[in-house]
Length: 262
Length: 256
Image (cartoon, rainbow over all chains, first blue to last red; front, side):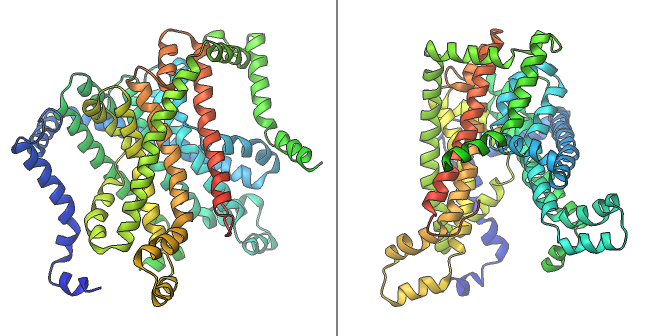
């Protein structure tokens, strides 16, 4: 309780970034002082230098582009399919009967185990990786869409119908917009796993990408390159999540959720 | 009467899965599906029986279970401690919160090659992958849960002379339990996924290894059987944990 008075003099950003900076400094120092083997933990400075080199040659950027492409392709396919199935599940009882058990069984499964099957079916190229990402992302999207659509305020739907709106227009103008926050929640949960799974699939089957880049570096025991991969993936993950947050705020600008934040 | 009716409803609920299985079997038998797409469901089950009787399956599953348990248990204990500590103690929050915020968007699977470099290809690297995969979901949910404890509860206990230790064990932890348990549920599925990925990638044992080994030697029936086992364990573990949560939280309203 006495802390605020003391913290009042220390600038907020300093408090906020103190511990990550301390961790990074401890990393650099422990290598410099010879406390850890630079093979197991290359110094931060040498990792950053190496990263600068790899970026300058464009090598790591090419792999990062491949990873982003696969993750986005799988994610967008999962969004299109997942929202469609979710809406159908919420609005049609036969679809609900068919899809509900599939989703409840498929959701908690470790989908990555299917990668071996997808390689058998679709080869080791982009297709198997993108299908894998789609399969991983689709379950949270279906269940969020289903929840969102089945919780739409009934009076909204009734009033629209009462004024003679066609079922199709009720779907596009009332149900989908009203369930948009929940659908976006589902997308937000699915999005990080798209990146996680893309990286794993790239490690499992060749074809470049950041995962392939790192696993190759690990097999050749190039620990600096492995760290460059970790750093680049972290940056890509952070950047994509930030963009996603902005898009969400933009799309939901009309919704009470955004008004509350202001 | 009642259990039978429940069984019937469950059977009806899972009928679509059965239909897909039967359709697949029928298409494989009539040759609509070319055999190079892999084994039919019945062939997969036959391979599963073989894997079970010659002991391979039990051995690899045992190894995977041990890795999962070691990483999962240690991560839950440490993650809860850090999360609750962050909520209750100012300096712990100042130190850990920025680190958690920076690590959160990081795809954890990117750490697998690093763990292989550090801990080799045996148990340790897999346990570390499970540990790291569980840590952040548990920390953040324990933090959120312990932050949300009603201050009135703590104040009343304190005014009655309860010690800080007793407040922690009797009030903060029970009140944060629902959040902690739902974080642990996420951790359970994330960690099983990371474990299988790590075993698929580089390993000499475990269920993930069994998938990649049988696949590379062209024994696709056994590969499908191993995948079936991995996926069923993931599903059953989640269901089982959901029942555990319901049982632990039976004293309060819980819908999850």
